[in-house]
Image (tube, rainbow over all chains, first blue to last red; front, side, top):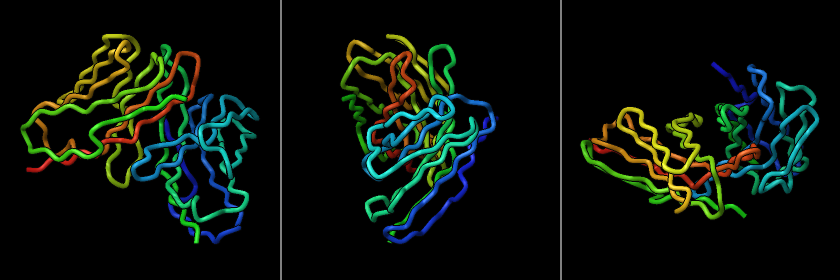
Length: 114
Length: 111
């Protein structure tokens, strides 16, 4: 089975801190994604990457950046955390099969910014 | 901008009953996905629908896609408690790896 591992399940940070969320997948998938999940808003795409060193903005990239130096690892960076970035962050990886892009999600990282 | 709407947002139903969750999307799309999320867990893939009229079934769940109406449905037959979860639909287009998700439907099955 594909595994997507997120480094931290729970984090508590202070406003203004720099935050790194790490994600590693073990099945050589080309595509990796970062979503945030908030009640009533579903999942919203922050950034995605379809290759090493490549990145594309999603729907809500403001306040975030990403890094993909190796195929298996996709990092989400909050340069200066703010309280409105308190959320559940979900990493996913996937590749095209028969025209579909089925994603496998990690367990999530719940970030609280105080 | 692609928007994906699900309804209802919350659904409480008795065991043994049938019900349908609806997923509407705002622009042309040819890939429709359904995911399930259990409380405190991450999302797992249920169905992928790739063409107009596509129907997929797994156990008590059946998903269908009408691309002309921009509508997908997830039908639950004779609900059981184990189906309690939040269900998300998502859409994408061929050649575009980005999936846009709906708001989710939280389903609670009451014994």
